Amino acid sequence: MFEKTYKSMNDQITPTPALVADTVKLIQSHHRPKGCKSRPFYRRLFMIAAMLALCIVLATPVLAARIPAIYELMYLVSPEVAQLFMPVQEACEDNGIRMEVVSAYLHDNTAEIYITLQDLTGDRVDETTDLFDSYSIHRAFDSSATCQRVGYDSESKTATFLILITEWGDHDISGSKLTFSVREFISHKTSLEDVPVDINLAGVEEFSATQTIYAVGKSGINLSKYTSATNDFVVLNPGMSICAPISGLDVTAIGYIDGMLHIQLATSEKRTLDNHGYFYLVDKDGNQTQYDYSVSFIEGMDSNDRMDYQEFVFDIPKDEIGDYTLYGSFYTSGLHTEGRWQVTFPLMVSEDN
Image (tube, rainbow, N blue to C red; front, top):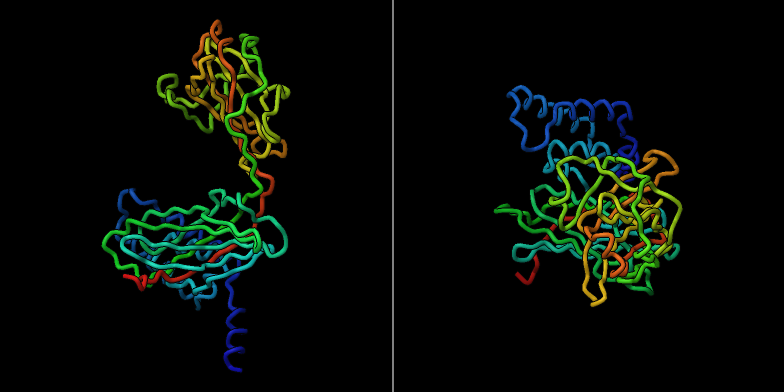
C-alpha cells in the first residue's frame, strides 16, 4: 500500500518546463566540446555546482527517464552520472511498436547487445527495417559502437538488431548501464541494382541553363582532382522529369558543362524515406566507369516543396559518350515510422568467460 502511494506521489514530482529550459541553457552556455582549451577553475566549479543543483531538482532517477531534455543535459555534463540516474527498463512501447533488449553481455573485449523491434498493430516492421541513423547509444564510458539489423521473423513481425561495442580501454564496464534510443525507422524498402537507365547518351548536348549552388554534400573517387575547398559548384538547372528509374527518384537534367557530363537525380522524400541512388557508365566491352564526383544540394529546404538533388559528373568527352550506356542502382523506402523508444540495461559478463 505504502509502495503504491509513494510511487504515485513520486510520479508527480516534475520540474516546470521553464525550469528545465533555463537549466539547459545555463549549463550549455558554459559547456565546450572535447578538444577545446580548458576553462578556468571557477568554470569547472560552476559545472559541478550546476550538476549538483540538477540532481536536487531531479530528486529521483524517475525524472531523468521521464524528461528527455534533463537526461540529455545530464549526459552532456557527465555520462557517468546520467547513466547512474537512468532506471533499468529493458522494454518499451510507443506508437504500437515494442522495443526490447533480449540479450546484453560482455565477452573478451566486446559487448554484444541484441534488441528487437516488433509491430504489435500492423506490418510496419519487415525484413528491410532500417533505423535510419536515428538511434543513439549512451554509455558511461568512451568506446566505439555500431548497430545493424541481423534478423527478421515474419510470423511475429519482429526485427532483431545487434549492437557491438568495442575499445573501451582498461575500464571495467561490467555492470555499467547503457541506454539505447530510437526516434524513427524506415521499412518496406525497394532496391533496383545495376539496371540500365532509359536515356540515349549519344543525344546529350551542352547545357546552357546552369546555376551556382552551395553543396551540402560532395563525394567521388576523383573529388579532389576536380574540385577545390569551396562548396560552390556550377550545376544543371532542374527541369521536368526525364525518366524515373524507380518510383521516388527522377532524372531531372542531363547535359555537358565545360566538357564534363552532368546527370541530375532528384527526390522529394530524402529526409523521411532516404531515397537515393547513383549512376555509372558501361562501354561496349562491358567495362564500368564510375562517376568522378557528385555534389548534393537542396531547393526549398524549409518548405513543404523541399527537393533534394544529387548531380553526378563524369569526365568523358562528348564525342565519346555515344559508346557508353548509362546504368545505375537505386533505393527507396515505402514507410517512415516515428516514435520514442528507449531502453536502459546493464552489461553483464558472459557466463562462458
